[in-house]
Length: 222
Image 1 (spheres, rainbow, N blue to C red):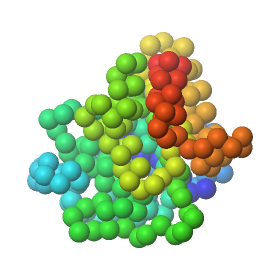
Image 2: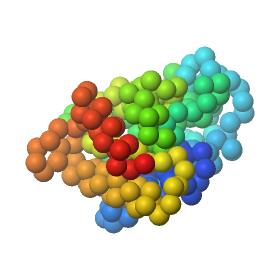
Image 3: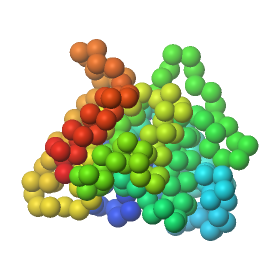
Image 4: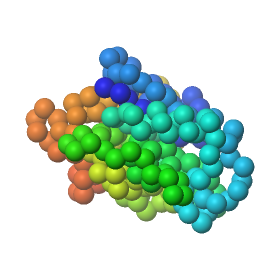
Protein backbone atom coordinates (compact mmCIF):
# COMPACT_ATOMS: atom_id res chain seq x y z
CA UNK A 1 0.00 0.00 0.00
CA UNK A 2 1.34 3.42 -0.95
CA UNK A 3 0.21 5.65 1.90
CA UNK A 4 0.36 9.45 1.90
CA UNK A 5 0.11 11.20 5.27
CA UNK A 6 -0.77 14.89 5.41
CA UNK A 7 -0.19 16.53 8.77
CA UNK A 8 -2.06 19.84 8.66
CA UNK A 9 -2.08 20.42 12.41
CA UNK A 10 -1.16 23.97 13.39
CA UNK A 11 1.23 22.72 16.10
CA UNK A 12 3.54 19.83 15.31
CA UNK A 13 3.84 17.15 17.95
CA UNK A 14 0.36 17.72 19.37
CA UNK A 15 -2.63 15.34 19.50
CA UNK A 16 -3.09 15.26 15.73
CA UNK A 17 0.57 14.49 15.00
CA UNK A 18 0.56 11.82 17.71
CA UNK A 19 -2.57 10.19 16.27
CA UNK A 20 -1.07 10.12 12.77
CA UNK A 21 2.10 8.48 14.09
CA UNK A 22 0.05 5.81 15.87
CA UNK A 23 -1.91 5.12 12.69
CA UNK A 24 1.26 4.78 10.60
CA UNK A 25 2.78 2.43 13.19
CA UNK A 26 -0.25 0.19 12.72
CA UNK A 27 0.68 -0.17 9.00
CA UNK A 28 4.30 -1.39 9.06
CA UNK A 29 4.20 -2.72 5.50
CA UNK A 30 2.99 0.53 3.94
CA UNK A 31 5.22 2.64 1.72
CA UNK A 32 4.72 5.99 3.47
CA UNK A 33 5.27 9.54 2.24
CA UNK A 34 4.73 12.33 4.77
CA UNK A 35 3.81 15.94 4.09
CA UNK A 36 3.49 18.61 6.77
CA UNK A 37 1.54 21.52 5.33
CA UNK A 38 2.90 24.19 7.65
CA UNK A 39 6.50 23.30 6.72
CA UNK A 40 5.60 23.78 3.04
CA UNK A 41 3.54 26.87 3.78
CA UNK A 42 6.47 28.60 5.45
CA UNK A 43 8.61 28.09 2.34
CA UNK A 44 6.27 28.74 -0.55
CA UNK A 45 3.50 31.12 0.54
CA UNK A 46 4.16 34.57 -0.91
CA UNK A 47 0.87 36.07 0.31
CA UNK A 48 -0.22 36.55 -3.29
CA UNK A 49 -3.85 36.17 -2.04
CA UNK A 50 -4.88 34.36 -5.26
CA UNK A 51 -6.35 31.62 -3.10
CA UNK A 52 -8.91 34.08 -1.71
CA UNK A 53 -10.45 34.26 -5.21
CA UNK A 54 -9.94 30.74 -6.53
CA UNK A 55 -10.13 28.74 -3.29
CA UNK A 56 -6.93 26.91 -4.28
CA UNK A 57 -3.24 27.57 -3.81
CA UNK A 58 -1.85 28.40 -7.26
CA UNK A 59 1.83 29.02 -6.54
CA UNK A 60 4.40 26.75 -8.20
CA UNK A 61 7.55 25.77 -6.35
CA UNK A 62 9.84 22.75 -6.46
CA UNK A 63 8.83 21.75 -2.91
CA UNK A 64 5.10 21.74 -3.54
CA UNK A 65 5.49 20.19 -7.00
CA UNK A 66 7.35 17.27 -5.39
CA UNK A 67 4.64 16.92 -2.76
CA UNK A 68 1.90 16.97 -5.40
CA UNK A 69 3.67 14.26 -7.42
CA UNK A 70 4.13 12.05 -4.34
CA UNK A 71 0.50 12.44 -3.30
CA UNK A 72 -0.79 11.69 -6.79
CA UNK A 73 1.03 8.34 -6.87
CA UNK A 74 -0.38 7.18 -3.50
CA UNK A 75 -3.41 4.89 -3.31
CA UNK A 76 -4.32 5.66 0.32
CA UNK A 77 -4.40 8.90 2.28
CA UNK A 78 -4.41 9.77 5.96
CA UNK A 79 -5.17 13.41 6.75
CA UNK A 80 -4.89 15.07 10.13
CA UNK A 81 -6.10 18.62 10.48
CA UNK A 82 -7.85 21.04 12.77
CA UNK A 83 -11.63 21.02 12.76
CA UNK A 84 -11.52 24.43 11.12
CA UNK A 85 -9.05 27.13 10.14
CA UNK A 86 -9.50 30.81 10.86
CA UNK A 87 -12.20 32.18 8.58
CA UNK A 88 -10.15 35.31 7.77
CA UNK A 89 -7.07 33.49 6.47
CA UNK A 90 -7.83 31.13 3.61
CA UNK A 91 -4.21 30.43 2.68
CA UNK A 92 -3.60 27.34 4.84
CA UNK A 93 -6.91 25.81 3.84
CA UNK A 94 -6.19 26.49 0.16
CA UNK A 95 -2.85 24.69 0.38
CA UNK A 96 -4.39 21.71 2.20
CA UNK A 97 -7.18 21.38 -0.36
CA UNK A 98 -4.65 21.58 -3.17
CA UNK A 99 -2.67 18.70 -1.67
CA UNK A 100 -5.81 16.61 -1.10
CA UNK A 101 -6.87 17.39 -4.66
CA UNK A 102 -3.49 16.16 -5.90
CA UNK A 103 -4.08 12.83 -4.16
CA UNK A 104 -7.51 12.59 -5.81
CA UNK A 105 -6.09 13.51 -9.22
CA UNK A 106 -8.48 16.43 -9.65
CA UNK A 107 -7.75 20.02 -10.52
CA UNK A 108 -5.33 21.42 -7.97
CA UNK A 109 -4.39 24.83 -9.42
CA UNK A 110 -5.48 27.19 -12.15
CA UNK A 111 -5.53 25.30 -15.43
CA UNK A 112 -3.56 22.36 -14.05
CA UNK A 113 -5.15 18.96 -13.85
CA UNK A 114 -3.63 15.74 -12.55
CA UNK A 115 -3.53 12.35 -14.23
CA UNK A 116 -6.84 10.55 -14.49
CA UNK A 117 -7.57 7.65 -12.20
CA UNK A 118 -7.51 4.22 -13.79
CA UNK A 119 -10.92 2.50 -14.06
CA UNK A 120 -11.71 0.52 -10.93
CA UNK A 121 -8.76 1.96 -8.98
CA UNK A 122 -10.74 3.81 -6.31
CA UNK A 123 -8.54 5.44 -3.74
CA UNK A 124 -9.08 5.27 0.02
CA UNK A 125 -8.77 7.89 2.74
CA UNK A 126 -9.17 8.32 6.50
CA UNK A 127 -9.27 11.48 8.57
CA UNK A 128 -8.18 12.63 12.01
CA UNK A 129 -9.91 15.80 13.18
CA UNK A 130 -8.55 17.89 16.04
CA UNK A 131 -11.32 19.81 17.78
CA UNK A 132 -13.29 20.13 21.02
CA UNK A 133 -16.23 17.68 21.19
CA UNK A 134 -19.09 19.73 19.77
CA UNK A 135 -16.94 21.58 17.26
CA UNK A 136 -15.57 18.29 15.92
CA UNK A 137 -19.08 17.15 15.02
CA UNK A 138 -19.90 20.45 13.32
CA UNK A 139 -16.63 20.34 11.36
CA UNK A 140 -17.30 16.87 9.97
CA UNK A 141 -20.82 17.95 9.02
CA UNK A 142 -19.33 20.76 6.93
CA UNK A 143 -20.66 23.53 9.18
CA UNK A 144 -17.28 25.11 10.04
CA UNK A 145 -15.02 27.22 7.78
CA UNK A 146 -12.59 25.07 5.78
CA UNK A 147 -10.50 22.56 7.75
CA UNK A 148 -12.03 19.09 7.91
CA UNK A 149 -15.09 20.13 5.92
CA UNK A 150 -12.90 21.25 3.02
CA UNK A 151 -11.04 17.95 3.04
CA UNK A 152 -14.35 16.04 2.97
CA UNK A 153 -15.51 18.01 -0.06
CA UNK A 154 -12.29 17.46 -2.00
CA UNK A 155 -12.29 13.72 -1.32
CA UNK A 156 -15.94 13.42 -2.34
CA UNK A 157 -15.23 15.29 -5.57
CA UNK A 158 -12.50 12.77 -6.32
CA UNK A 159 -14.83 9.83 -5.58
CA UNK A 160 -12.49 8.67 -2.85
CA UNK A 161 -13.73 6.01 -0.43
CA UNK A 162 -13.59 7.54 3.06
CA UNK A 163 -13.19 4.48 5.25
CA UNK A 164 -12.66 5.98 8.67
CA UNK A 165 -12.60 9.14 10.75
CA UNK A 166 -11.76 10.05 14.32
CA UNK A 167 -11.78 13.21 16.40
CA UNK A 168 -9.05 13.86 18.93
CA UNK A 169 -8.90 16.69 21.45
CA UNK A 170 -7.41 19.97 20.38
CA UNK A 171 -5.25 19.79 23.53
CA UNK A 172 -4.04 16.99 25.75
CA UNK A 173 -6.21 16.41 28.81
CA UNK A 174 -4.03 13.91 30.65
CA UNK A 175 -2.83 10.37 29.88
CA UNK A 176 -6.37 9.08 29.28
CA UNK A 177 -6.91 11.45 26.35
CA UNK A 178 -3.62 10.32 24.81
CA UNK A 179 -4.63 6.68 25.13
CA UNK A 180 -8.03 7.34 23.53
CA UNK A 181 -6.42 9.23 20.66
CA UNK A 182 -3.97 6.37 20.11
CA UNK A 183 -6.70 3.75 19.99
CA UNK A 184 -8.87 5.81 17.63
CA UNK A 185 -5.91 6.28 15.29
CA UNK A 186 -5.08 2.59 15.26
CA UNK A 187 -8.71 1.78 14.52
CA UNK A 188 -8.92 4.00 11.44
CA UNK A 189 -5.55 2.65 10.27
CA UNK A 190 -6.99 -0.84 10.32
CA UNK A 191 -9.99 0.39 8.34
CA UNK A 192 -7.65 1.97 5.82
CA UNK A 193 -5.69 -1.25 5.44
CA UNK A 194 -8.85 -3.26 4.95
CA UNK A 195 -9.81 -1.17 1.92
CA UNK A 196 -12.95 0.67 0.91
CA UNK A 197 -15.04 -2.04 2.59
CA UNK A 198 -14.19 -3.91 5.76
CA UNK A 199 -14.03 -7.67 5.85
CA UNK A 200 -17.59 -7.71 7.09
CA UNK A 201 -18.71 -5.99 3.89
CA UNK A 202 -19.43 -2.60 5.45
CA UNK A 203 -19.31 0.15 2.78
CA UNK A 204 -17.27 3.35 2.86
CA UNK A 205 -18.52 6.20 5.01
CA UNK A 206 -21.20 8.29 3.34
CA UNK A 207 -24.28 10.19 4.41
CA UNK A 208 -25.66 9.04 7.73
CA UNK A 209 -22.65 6.80 8.32
CA UNK A 210 -20.40 9.82 8.09
CA UNK A 211 -22.46 11.64 10.72
CA UNK A 212 -22.53 8.59 12.98
CA UNK A 213 -18.79 8.09 12.64
CA UNK A 214 -18.15 11.73 13.49
CA UNK A 215 -20.29 11.53 16.62
CA UNK A 216 -18.72 8.25 17.66
CA UNK A 217 -15.21 9.52 17.06
CA UNK A 218 -15.80 12.62 19.15
CA UNK A 219 -17.32 10.79 22.12
CA UNK A 220 -14.62 8.15 22.21
CA UNK A 221 -11.47 10.07 21.34
CA UNK A 222 -11.73 13.49 22.96
